[in-house]
Length: 311
Ligand code: NDP
Image 1 (tube, protein in one colour):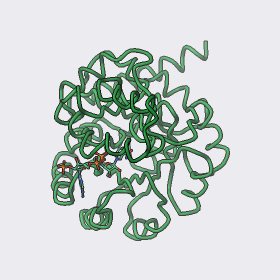
Image 2 (cartoon, rainbow, N blue to C red):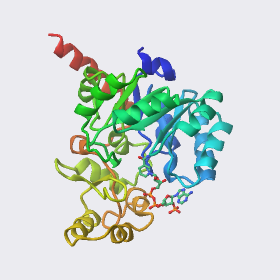
Image 3 (cartoon, helix red, strand yellow):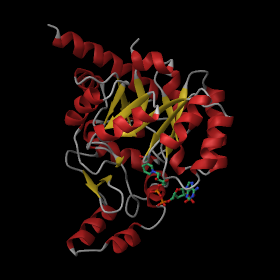
Image 4 (cartoon, helix red, strand yellow):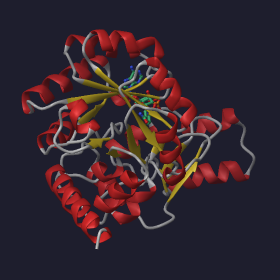
């Protein structure tokens, strides 16, 4: 057991990212039952949906699980109320400053993790009272930091900047990449893309198939002027590239993105018009596995990689 598994009462220091449209109760419960920390992604859920998902998760696992809470979510106060009422053990905040909510969660006995993309934000999260940070590098899918700091550069800097445990994210999908993150000083890993292409993920099957078919260079960080996001190449991503080439303004980019594109692609399986958020590591996935297979294999490969290094 290390600081991360001890802090959250989990068997292995593996956190499942709270990817919107992919992370419902089935995935969260399956990851927690397999010994990791499963996460419900609340960013794509209306408040009544979130409450239902939390209740289903509680009935499917007795183990700790988390809710990812993007602080830019329009009804964040409603989500916090539900998280407190339902006594969710762990909250992972992202996309904002956790300071104004930290005391509320701590008083309720809820552990708090915040997702950061720089050591500056990690220090702020620590000062706010967070129990741990997820430090997420440039390789990660979906919403991303503006500085484009890679996981290899980010993790040691964050580890040196804070005294709370650091969970590495961005480019991590197996035991070898987990060991690399540990060598950089992380005490846990968060895997997102790996759990998108997972049997229990609520992503549309067409999206899962596109993810496991992805090759090197098939994702790009884009829309930095609005919210930086890493997308899988598809006709919609091509439209975005063309808009940049023709010098589109921010308002034109926003109009092109429109509303509900991520749902269309990731949840409804529209591979043409949808926004497909996924990390660079999609090029290494190859198959859709169950959550248990992913966690067991990751731990097995991690131990084998440790052995190999010590020879
Ligand atoms: P859009 O504005 O394009 O669309 C909103 C989507 O969220 C719709 O599909 C809508 O579903 C759904 N939704 C759920 N709850 C609400 C609500 N209270 N009000 C309005 N819409 C809601 O946003 P995105 O799809 O790009 O992102 C959705 C959310 O996820 C945002 O809060 C965003 O910040 C967050 N997010 C978080 C990420 C992270 O890293 N944690 C990554 C990407 C997004 P419906 O179509 O059924 O109305």
